[in-house]
Image (cartoon, rainbow, N blue to C red; front, top):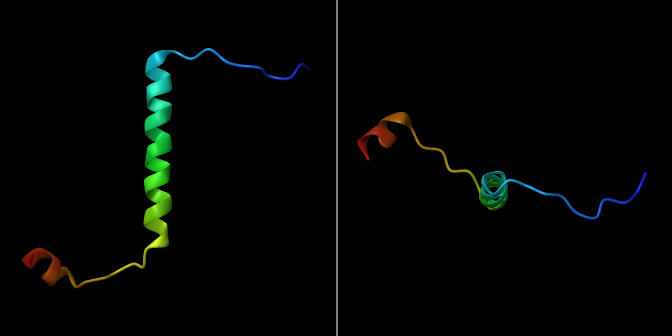
Length: 46
């Protein structure tokens, strides 16, 4: 099988792919942070 040299994507599909990559970057950064928990009453009060 030949090596893949490139692909053709619909522009909307490409934009969705870029959005998903950005989402993954954000999730990766969020996972690095320590989780903070609060009581439901406190959450609802704020």
